[in-house]
Every structure is written in C-alpha cells, then in structure tokens.
Length: 125
Image (tube, helix red, strand yellow):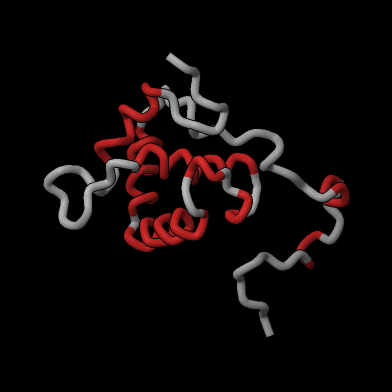
C-alpha cells in the first residue's frame, strides 16, 4: 500500500472522519465520493501555507476546491468535525507547532503595559 504524502490523511485518520462529512448515501444532494481527495486538498493548502491557486492538479481545480471549502465552512461542517476531533484525547492530527505560534521579538520584554490595545475590543473614549 503506498504511503500518503505528508499532507494527506492516513487510512486510520480517514476512517475517523468520513462519517462526519456530508455526501454519504442517504444524505440530501450529491454524493461525496471524492470527499477524501477534497479533504486532502484542503489539508495540502492549509498545511503547506500555499495559495489556493498553487494547489497541485491531482486535487482538481483549485476554484472548485476553494468554493466547496467555503460552502462547508458556511454550513458548519468544519466546526462539527473539529468538535468531534477535539473530544478524542489521543488525537495526533490537531497539533500546533512552533511555526504557528509566534511573537514579535519586542513582545518578549512586555513593554507598553496597559497601553496595549487588544484586537476586537473597542477603545475607551
């Protein structure tokens, strides 16, 4: 059996996800026979940090993948998947590494005190 690329789901990971996704037999609308390819395409973009337009051809047309990703996000599919995966304490696929968590070098000193404004918090007048 060929090993999946580092950006793709293993068979074990896919077995945990496939029942959570729309497009199964009995679901309204079209069937999602290519759900695994689609999820792997999304993972490729998110894990590589590349633009949607750089998606390899093996995953299909990038505009179609992005449109489906957006529809699933609006429908809450990704929220549902993450909610289930977070409950699994033994998961290996929800990792935050040091390449994601960064602070500006000046953030180390803590200068600025209470003068720092939090994003999304209205300023006091």
